[in-house]
Image 1: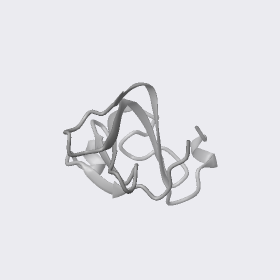
Image 2: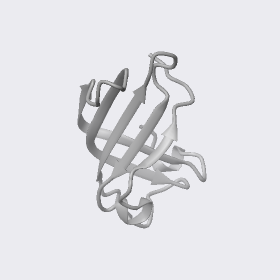
Image 3: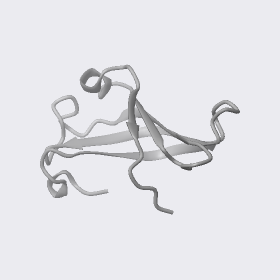
Image 4: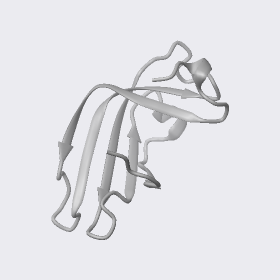
Amino acid sequence: MKTPTEVFGDAVQFSIFGGSMRSRVFSWAVRTSFMATGMASVTGNGGFPPFAPQGQLSQLMVCITGGTQIEFSNITLVFGTPASGHFGPPPINGAVRKAER
């Protein structure tokens, strides 16, 4: 993980520490999936954010899903406190742009 001073401005970076990973966690309709959960460090704009000024960790759940045509296509993030005070408690949905193995 990069230190806050190494992160580009206006970028948000998170890393999960001591997390767990599970695969095939969703219904039969989702062809490929995995979920990672753990405590995450969040940085933004080159430093710690106002909701975690000393680098406090937040619970984070990351779900990656896909199908038969595109193995990994969707990402969902759910933050716990204190990050949920900034990002909100609802899931944040996005698209996977590039998957590397």
